[in-house]
Length: 403
Image (cartoon, rainbow, N blue to C red; front, side, top):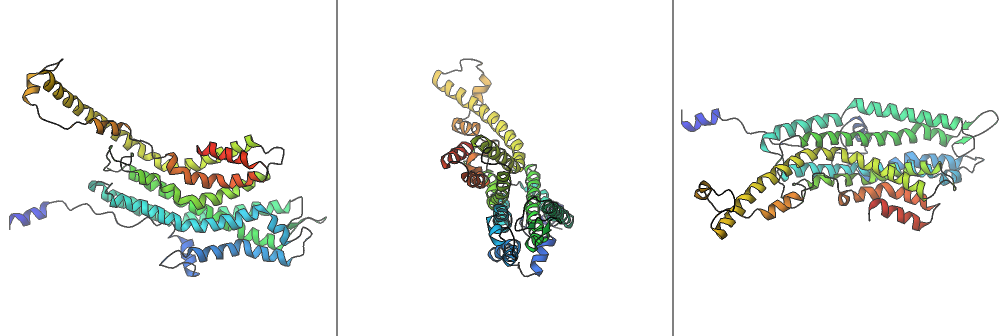
Protein backbone atom coordinates (compact mmCIF):
# COMPACT_ATOMS: atom_id res chain seq x y z
CA UNK A 1 0.00 0.00 0.00
CA UNK A 2 1.46 3.35 -1.01
CA UNK A 3 1.98 6.20 1.41
CA UNK A 4 -0.38 8.40 -0.60
CA UNK A 5 -3.19 5.84 -0.33
CA UNK A 6 -2.60 5.38 3.38
CA UNK A 7 -2.67 9.16 3.90
CA UNK A 8 -5.92 9.52 1.97
CA UNK A 9 -7.58 6.94 4.22
CA UNK A 10 -6.47 8.50 7.44
CA UNK A 11 -7.32 12.12 6.60
CA UNK A 12 -10.67 13.45 7.85
CA UNK A 13 -13.18 14.31 5.12
CA UNK A 14 -13.60 17.95 4.19
CA UNK A 15 -16.51 19.73 5.87
CA UNK A 16 -19.59 19.72 3.66
CA UNK A 17 -20.36 22.89 1.78
CA UNK A 18 -23.47 24.87 2.76
CA UNK A 19 -25.96 24.29 -0.02
CA UNK A 20 -29.46 25.49 -0.72
CA UNK A 21 -31.24 28.81 -0.33
CA UNK A 22 -33.53 30.25 2.28
CA UNK A 23 -36.65 30.61 0.13
CA UNK A 24 -38.83 32.55 2.53
CA UNK A 25 -42.07 32.51 0.52
CA UNK A 26 -42.23 28.86 -0.49
CA UNK A 27 -43.14 25.69 1.36
CA UNK A 28 -45.92 25.00 3.80
CA UNK A 29 -49.60 24.06 3.31
CA UNK A 30 -50.68 27.46 1.96
CA UNK A 31 -47.98 27.36 -0.71
CA UNK A 32 -49.15 23.87 -1.70
CA UNK A 33 -52.76 25.07 -1.87
CA UNK A 34 -51.84 27.99 -4.13
CA UNK A 35 -49.89 25.64 -6.37
CA UNK A 36 -52.86 23.30 -6.71
CA UNK A 37 -55.10 26.26 -7.54
CA UNK A 38 -52.70 27.28 -10.31
CA UNK A 39 -51.64 30.53 -8.62
CA UNK A 40 -48.05 29.36 -8.22
CA UNK A 41 -45.68 27.26 -10.25
CA UNK A 42 -42.14 25.97 -9.94
CA UNK A 43 -40.75 28.83 -12.05
CA UNK A 44 -41.90 31.76 -9.94
CA UNK A 45 -44.36 33.33 -7.55
CA UNK A 46 -46.57 34.90 -10.26
CA UNK A 47 -46.74 38.04 -8.14
CA UNK A 48 -48.74 40.25 -10.50
CA UNK A 49 -51.45 37.68 -11.15
CA UNK A 50 -51.70 36.76 -7.47
CA UNK A 51 -52.07 40.41 -6.45
CA UNK A 52 -55.01 40.79 -8.83
CA UNK A 53 -56.64 37.56 -7.61
CA UNK A 54 -56.18 38.25 -3.90
CA UNK A 55 -57.42 41.85 -4.13
CA UNK A 56 -60.37 40.73 -6.26
CA UNK A 57 -61.30 38.14 -3.64
CA UNK A 58 -60.77 40.36 -0.59
CA UNK A 59 -61.88 43.75 -1.94
CA UNK A 60 -63.56 43.28 -5.32
CA UNK A 61 -66.25 40.75 -4.40
CA UNK A 62 -67.52 42.72 -1.36
CA UNK A 63 -67.63 45.81 -3.57
CA UNK A 64 -69.76 43.98 -6.15
CA UNK A 65 -72.05 42.68 -3.42
CA UNK A 66 -72.41 46.19 -1.99
CA UNK A 67 -73.05 47.54 -5.48
CA UNK A 68 -75.90 45.07 -5.99
CA UNK A 69 -77.40 45.73 -2.56
CA UNK A 70 -79.66 48.74 -1.99
CA UNK A 71 -78.64 49.94 1.46
CA UNK A 72 -79.74 52.88 3.56
CA UNK A 73 -76.10 53.89 3.97
CA UNK A 74 -75.49 54.07 0.26
CA UNK A 75 -74.15 50.60 -0.51
CA UNK A 76 -71.17 50.84 -2.82
CA UNK A 77 -70.66 54.51 -2.02
CA UNK A 78 -70.35 53.73 1.67
CA UNK A 79 -67.97 50.90 0.83
CA UNK A 80 -65.72 53.14 -1.27
CA UNK A 81 -65.60 55.78 1.47
CA UNK A 82 -64.47 53.27 4.09
CA UNK A 83 -60.71 53.85 4.45
CA UNK A 84 -60.42 50.79 6.68
CA UNK A 85 -61.56 48.58 3.83
CA UNK A 86 -59.11 50.20 1.43
CA UNK A 87 -56.27 49.81 3.92
CA UNK A 88 -56.94 46.18 4.83
CA UNK A 89 -58.50 44.52 1.78
CA UNK A 90 -56.77 46.46 -0.98
CA UNK A 91 -53.50 48.04 0.15
CA UNK A 92 -52.39 45.57 2.83
CA UNK A 93 -53.34 42.33 1.11
CA UNK A 94 -51.83 43.55 -2.16
CA UNK A 95 -48.67 44.60 -0.31
CA UNK A 96 -48.41 41.24 1.46
CA UNK A 97 -48.52 39.36 -1.84
CA UNK A 98 -45.99 41.77 -3.36
CA UNK A 99 -43.77 41.24 -0.31
CA UNK A 100 -43.58 37.50 -1.00
CA UNK A 101 -41.29 38.05 -3.98
CA UNK A 102 -39.36 40.97 -2.49
CA UNK A 103 -38.68 39.14 0.77
CA UNK A 104 -37.69 35.93 -0.96
CA UNK A 105 -35.26 37.69 -3.30
CA UNK A 106 -33.79 39.83 -0.52
CA UNK A 107 -33.24 37.06 2.02
CA UNK A 108 -31.95 34.63 -0.58
CA UNK A 109 -29.39 37.20 -1.75
CA UNK A 110 -28.33 37.83 1.85
CA UNK A 111 -27.92 34.12 2.56
CA UNK A 112 -25.95 33.58 -0.64
CA UNK A 113 -23.64 36.45 0.29
CA UNK A 114 -22.57 34.53 3.37
CA UNK A 115 -21.31 31.83 1.02
CA UNK A 116 -19.92 33.86 -1.87
CA UNK A 117 -18.05 36.22 0.48
CA UNK A 118 -16.73 33.19 2.38
CA UNK A 119 -17.83 34.68 5.69
CA UNK A 120 -18.43 31.24 7.23
CA UNK A 121 -15.22 29.45 8.27
CA UNK A 122 -14.75 25.98 6.73
CA UNK A 123 -15.01 24.36 10.16
CA UNK A 124 -18.54 25.80 10.56
CA UNK A 125 -19.96 24.79 7.17
CA UNK A 126 -21.65 21.71 8.61
CA UNK A 127 -23.37 23.72 11.36
CA UNK A 128 -24.47 26.30 8.78
CA UNK A 129 -26.07 23.59 6.66
CA UNK A 130 -27.83 22.14 9.71
CA UNK A 131 -29.12 25.60 10.65
CA UNK A 132 -30.53 26.12 7.16
CA UNK A 133 -32.28 22.74 7.14
CA UNK A 134 -33.76 23.43 10.57
CA UNK A 135 -35.06 26.82 9.42
CA UNK A 136 -36.66 25.36 6.31
CA UNK A 137 -38.46 22.79 8.45
CA UNK A 138 -39.78 25.60 10.64
CA UNK A 139 -40.83 27.53 7.55
CA UNK A 140 -42.89 24.56 6.34
CA UNK A 141 -44.55 23.93 9.71
CA UNK A 142 -48.14 22.74 9.36
CA UNK A 143 -48.74 23.50 13.02
CA UNK A 144 -47.71 27.13 12.55
CA UNK A 145 -50.08 27.71 9.65
CA UNK A 146 -52.88 25.94 11.54
CA UNK A 147 -52.36 28.40 14.41
CA UNK A 148 -52.42 31.32 11.97
CA UNK A 149 -55.70 30.05 10.53
CA UNK A 150 -57.18 29.73 14.02
CA UNK A 151 -56.03 33.27 14.88
CA UNK A 152 -57.53 34.57 11.62
CA UNK A 153 -60.87 32.91 12.43
CA UNK A 154 -60.78 34.45 15.90
CA UNK A 155 -60.16 37.89 14.35
CA UNK A 156 -63.11 37.33 12.01
CA UNK A 157 -65.30 36.36 14.99
CA UNK A 158 -64.36 39.59 16.77
CA UNK A 159 -65.13 41.54 13.59
CA UNK A 160 -68.54 39.82 13.40
CA UNK A 161 -69.26 40.72 17.03
CA UNK A 162 -68.39 44.32 16.22
CA UNK A 163 -70.89 44.33 13.36
CA UNK A 164 -73.61 42.75 15.49
CA UNK A 165 -73.21 45.53 18.06
CA UNK A 166 -72.55 48.35 15.59
CA UNK A 167 -74.53 51.50 16.48
CA UNK A 168 -74.77 52.77 12.90
CA UNK A 169 -75.72 51.46 9.48
CA UNK A 170 -73.01 50.96 6.89
CA UNK A 171 -72.25 48.88 3.83
CA UNK A 172 -71.57 45.91 6.15
CA UNK A 173 -74.51 46.08 8.54
CA UNK A 174 -78.01 47.52 8.75
CA UNK A 175 -79.12 48.66 12.19
CA UNK A 176 -82.80 48.05 12.89
CA UNK A 177 -85.27 47.77 15.72
CA UNK A 178 -85.16 43.99 15.47
CA UNK A 179 -81.37 43.96 15.74
CA UNK A 180 -78.50 44.37 13.34
CA UNK A 181 -78.58 42.61 9.98
CA UNK A 182 -75.26 41.88 8.31
CA UNK A 183 -75.27 42.51 4.56
CA UNK A 184 -73.90 40.03 1.98
CA UNK A 185 -70.82 42.25 1.61
CA UNK A 186 -70.42 42.23 5.38
CA UNK A 187 -70.67 38.45 5.53
CA UNK A 188 -68.06 38.09 2.80
CA UNK A 189 -65.72 40.29 4.80
CA UNK A 190 -66.34 38.21 7.92
CA UNK A 191 -65.81 34.88 6.18
CA UNK A 192 -63.09 35.76 3.64
CA UNK A 193 -61.53 39.23 3.70
CA UNK A 194 -60.71 39.60 7.39
CA UNK A 195 -59.36 36.03 7.85
CA UNK A 196 -57.28 36.36 4.68
CA UNK A 197 -55.70 39.60 5.90
CA UNK A 198 -54.74 38.17 9.29
CA UNK A 199 -53.51 34.88 7.88
CA UNK A 200 -51.20 36.58 5.38
CA UNK A 201 -49.95 39.03 8.02
CA UNK A 202 -49.10 36.28 10.51
CA UNK A 203 -47.57 34.02 7.86
CA UNK A 204 -45.03 36.62 6.76
CA UNK A 205 -44.31 37.56 10.37
CA UNK A 206 -43.66 33.91 11.31
CA UNK A 207 -41.28 33.43 8.42
CA UNK A 208 -39.39 36.55 9.44
CA UNK A 209 -39.01 35.09 12.93
CA UNK A 210 -37.68 31.89 11.34
CA UNK A 211 -35.18 33.97 9.36
CA UNK A 212 -34.26 35.85 12.53
CA UNK A 213 -33.43 32.62 14.30
CA UNK A 214 -31.34 31.50 11.32
CA UNK A 215 -29.32 34.72 11.51
CA UNK A 216 -28.84 34.32 15.24
CA UNK A 217 -27.58 30.76 14.74
CA UNK A 218 -25.18 31.91 12.06
CA UNK A 219 -23.90 34.66 14.36
CA UNK A 220 -22.73 31.92 16.74
CA UNK A 221 -20.66 30.17 14.06
CA UNK A 222 -16.98 30.76 13.44
CA UNK A 223 -17.05 33.70 11.04
CA UNK A 224 -14.16 35.01 8.99
CA UNK A 225 -14.54 38.65 9.97
CA UNK A 226 -11.92 41.37 9.72
CA UNK A 227 -12.04 44.60 11.70
CA UNK A 228 -10.45 46.64 8.91
CA UNK A 229 -12.99 45.62 6.26
CA UNK A 230 -13.89 48.66 4.12
CA UNK A 231 -17.62 48.27 4.85
CA UNK A 232 -16.98 49.32 8.46
CA UNK A 233 -18.87 46.30 9.81
CA UNK A 234 -16.28 43.55 9.62
CA UNK A 235 -17.63 42.35 6.26
CA UNK A 236 -21.26 42.04 7.45
CA UNK A 237 -22.72 45.29 6.10
CA UNK A 238 -24.79 43.33 3.57
CA UNK A 239 -26.70 41.70 6.44
CA UNK A 240 -27.76 45.10 7.80
CA UNK A 241 -29.62 45.82 4.55
CA UNK A 242 -31.95 42.81 4.66
CA UNK A 243 -34.85 44.71 6.39
CA UNK A 244 -35.42 46.69 3.19
CA UNK A 245 -36.78 43.50 1.62
CA UNK A 246 -39.80 43.96 3.93
CA UNK A 247 -40.74 47.46 2.74
CA UNK A 248 -44.00 46.35 1.08
CA UNK A 249 -44.99 44.25 4.07
CA UNK A 250 -44.30 47.03 6.56
CA UNK A 251 -46.19 49.53 4.39
CA UNK A 252 -49.22 47.23 4.27
CA UNK A 253 -49.32 46.69 8.03
CA UNK A 254 -48.68 50.38 8.68
CA UNK A 255 -51.59 51.37 6.44
CA UNK A 256 -54.03 49.36 8.55
CA UNK A 257 -52.54 50.57 11.84
CA UNK A 258 -52.62 54.20 10.70
CA UNK A 259 -56.26 54.08 9.58
CA UNK A 260 -57.30 52.23 12.74
CA UNK A 261 -55.50 54.76 14.89
CA UNK A 262 -57.02 57.64 12.92
CA UNK A 263 -60.51 56.41 13.75
CA UNK A 264 -59.79 56.86 17.46
CA UNK A 265 -58.96 60.54 17.05
CA UNK A 266 -61.36 63.30 16.19
CA UNK A 267 -60.38 66.68 14.81
CA UNK A 268 -59.76 68.08 18.30
CA UNK A 269 -57.63 65.28 19.78
CA UNK A 270 -55.36 64.68 16.78
CA UNK A 271 -52.54 67.20 16.84
CA UNK A 272 -48.84 67.27 16.05
CA UNK A 273 -47.91 65.93 19.50
CA UNK A 274 -50.24 62.92 19.49
CA UNK A 275 -49.31 62.08 15.89
CA UNK A 276 -45.60 62.33 16.66
CA UNK A 277 -45.96 60.02 19.66
CA UNK A 278 -47.96 57.51 17.63
CA UNK A 279 -45.52 57.55 14.71
CA UNK A 280 -42.46 57.35 16.96
CA UNK A 281 -43.91 54.42 18.92
CA UNK A 282 -44.74 52.53 15.74
CA UNK A 283 -41.30 53.24 14.24
CA UNK A 284 -39.56 51.92 17.36
CA UNK A 285 -41.67 48.76 17.26
CA UNK A 286 -40.91 48.14 13.58
CA UNK A 287 -37.18 48.77 13.95
CA UNK A 288 -37.03 46.54 17.04
CA UNK A 289 -38.46 43.69 14.97
CA UNK A 290 -35.54 43.90 12.57
CA UNK A 291 -32.89 44.88 15.12
CA UNK A 292 -33.48 41.67 17.10
CA UNK A 293 -31.68 39.31 14.70
CA UNK A 294 -29.04 41.88 13.78
CA UNK A 295 -28.14 42.37 17.44
CA UNK A 296 -26.83 38.79 17.53
CA UNK A 297 -23.79 39.89 15.54
CA UNK A 298 -22.82 42.52 18.10
CA UNK A 299 -20.91 40.06 20.28
CA UNK A 300 -18.66 38.64 17.54
CA UNK A 301 -18.07 42.15 16.21
CA UNK A 302 -17.27 43.49 19.69
CA UNK A 303 -14.86 40.60 20.32
CA UNK A 304 -13.29 41.15 16.92
CA UNK A 305 -12.82 44.86 17.56
CA UNK A 306 -11.23 44.33 20.96
CA UNK A 307 -8.88 41.56 19.75
CA UNK A 308 -7.84 43.51 16.65
CA UNK A 309 -7.14 46.71 18.57
CA UNK A 310 -5.09 44.78 21.13
CA UNK A 311 -3.05 43.03 18.43
CA UNK A 312 -2.46 46.20 16.40
CA UNK A 313 -1.58 48.15 19.54
CA UNK A 314 1.16 45.62 20.28
CA UNK A 315 2.52 45.98 16.76
CA UNK A 316 2.30 49.76 17.04
CA UNK A 317 4.46 49.63 20.18
CA UNK A 318 7.03 47.46 18.40
CA UNK A 319 7.04 49.74 15.34
CA UNK A 320 7.38 52.97 17.30
CA UNK A 321 10.14 51.62 19.56
CA UNK A 322 12.03 50.52 16.45
CA UNK A 323 11.61 54.00 14.95
CA UNK A 324 12.77 55.51 18.23
CA UNK A 325 15.95 53.41 18.25
CA UNK A 326 16.71 54.36 14.68
CA UNK A 327 16.36 58.03 15.48
CA UNK A 328 17.98 58.18 18.95
CA UNK A 329 20.18 55.09 18.88
CA UNK A 330 18.38 53.71 21.92
CA UNK A 331 14.98 53.48 23.57
CA UNK A 332 14.34 56.21 26.10
CA UNK A 333 12.84 53.79 28.62
CA UNK A 334 13.11 50.04 29.17
CA UNK A 335 16.07 49.65 26.84
CA UNK A 336 16.73 45.98 26.18
CA UNK A 337 19.64 44.34 24.34
CA UNK A 338 17.48 41.29 23.60
CA UNK A 339 14.93 43.53 21.91
CA UNK A 340 17.68 44.99 19.73
CA UNK A 341 19.03 41.54 18.92
CA UNK A 342 15.63 40.35 17.67
CA UNK A 343 14.89 43.57 15.81
CA UNK A 344 13.00 43.15 12.54
CA UNK A 345 11.22 45.53 10.25
CA UNK A 346 7.40 45.67 10.42
CA UNK A 347 4.86 47.82 8.63
CA UNK A 348 3.31 50.83 10.33
CA UNK A 349 -0.03 49.61 11.75
CA UNK A 350 -1.34 53.10 12.56
CA UNK A 351 -3.83 53.34 9.70
CA UNK A 352 -5.20 49.85 10.36
CA UNK A 353 -5.53 50.69 14.04
CA UNK A 354 -7.52 53.83 13.23
CA UNK A 355 -9.83 51.86 10.96
CA UNK A 356 -10.33 49.13 13.57
CA UNK A 357 -11.33 51.70 16.18
CA UNK A 358 -14.12 52.88 13.85
CA UNK A 359 -15.57 49.39 13.42
CA UNK A 360 -19.32 49.43 14.08
CA UNK A 361 -20.35 46.66 16.45
CA UNK A 362 -24.09 47.07 15.73
CA UNK A 363 -25.44 46.38 12.27
CA UNK A 364 -28.37 48.78 12.54
CA UNK A 365 -27.60 52.21 11.12
CA UNK A 366 -29.68 55.08 9.75
CA UNK A 367 -28.70 54.54 6.13
CA UNK A 368 -29.65 50.87 6.20
CA UNK A 369 -33.05 51.34 7.89
CA UNK A 370 -34.12 54.61 6.26
CA UNK A 371 -36.20 52.91 3.51
CA UNK A 372 -38.01 50.67 6.00
CA UNK A 373 -38.58 53.70 8.22
CA UNK A 374 -40.20 55.58 5.36
CA UNK A 375 -42.43 52.58 4.61
CA UNK A 376 -43.51 52.47 8.27
CA UNK A 377 -44.28 56.17 8.61
CA UNK A 378 -45.70 57.11 5.20
CA UNK A 379 -49.23 55.75 5.87
CA UNK A 380 -49.34 57.72 9.14
CA UNK A 381 -48.25 60.84 7.27
CA UNK A 382 -50.99 60.35 4.67
CA UNK A 383 -53.60 59.80 7.37
CA UNK A 384 -52.39 62.82 9.32
CA UNK A 385 -52.35 65.01 6.20
CA UNK A 386 -56.14 64.76 6.01
CA UNK A 387 -56.41 66.64 9.31
CA UNK A 388 -53.17 68.54 9.89
CA UNK A 389 -51.15 71.02 7.80
CA UNK A 390 -48.74 69.36 5.38
CA UNK A 391 -45.83 71.39 6.78
CA UNK A 392 -46.45 69.86 10.23
CA UNK A 393 -46.46 66.34 8.76
CA UNK A 394 -43.25 67.05 6.85
CA UNK A 395 -41.59 68.35 10.00
CA UNK A 396 -42.56 65.21 11.95
CA UNK A 397 -41.20 62.94 9.22
CA UNK A 398 -37.88 64.77 9.08
CA UNK A 399 -37.56 64.69 12.85
CA UNK A 400 -38.26 60.96 13.16
CA UNK A 401 -36.14 59.94 10.18
CA UNK A 402 -33.32 62.28 11.18
CA UNK A 403 -33.22 63.81 7.72
